[in-house]
Image (cartoon, rainbow, N blue to C red; front, side):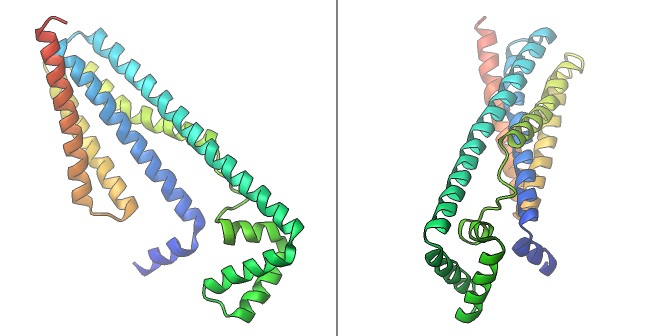
Length: 236
């Protein structure tokens, strides 16, 4: 317990990796739930394999592209904000270096250093690389490791696709009489696993996360199956 806390407090790379893992788990979870809801809903109206396959593939591609595009736009905006903040900091360092040195000293003092030590540390950091020092201490940005929108987009695309493949394959591969049961069981099992994974990564209650995930997926499939069955019975 102590060792994990130490890594979390001092390992910026660890926190970044955990964020990526959480995003991957959540992306896979979205792929499972959305695609399962879609194919189970269609299965409520028809048991034609080609129709189920078409609906599942359409949902997989639409969802993965939507996730990738949304993540790209979001992270691009974040990256632009980081670059703008760095450019402003660079200009302030050039135009008023003494004020920026005093500001860095104050920030280090707020982190628990004495005034004299904070001043000496600020001077040394400024001499070594003033922009990097201010970026990390003041802005919380690593100039050498800005967020990459393409990495985020690909990660979301792959995670969603991996999750969506499970219900798609489960609904089209088994015999017609087994499709719905195999899909429901495999989806609920996968949601239990993603709930467990997200809880472990976030140090949250595992049972509550698994129950919440499984219940949400079961509700989504029940609603879409009911809607599909009603539409199928109405001949739509």
